[in-house]
Image (cartoon, rainbow, N blue to C red; front, side):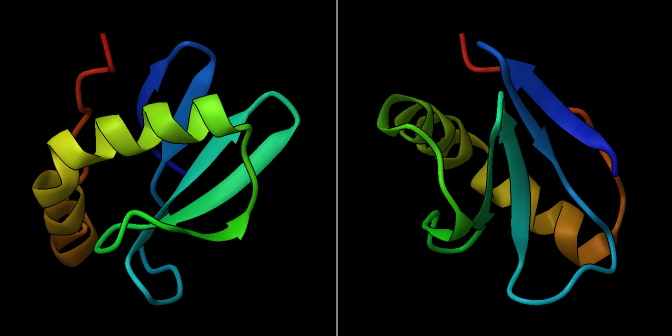
Length: 82
């Protein structure tokens, strides 16, 4: 599973050919979550509130790029949240 970015201990990955809806995977310590790219809501798993807010802030900036990666299956690294 390609790693899209990593920041503050949060790892964001994208599986190509994964099940709908378009989503990305987040790993933070012992926590795992799947975020819907279109709505930026957690669709599976959980994260601490602070980590979830950082993921949403990051994903808001790169939502278009994430959706394009999902649709084209062309992987690109994205900058971390700074």
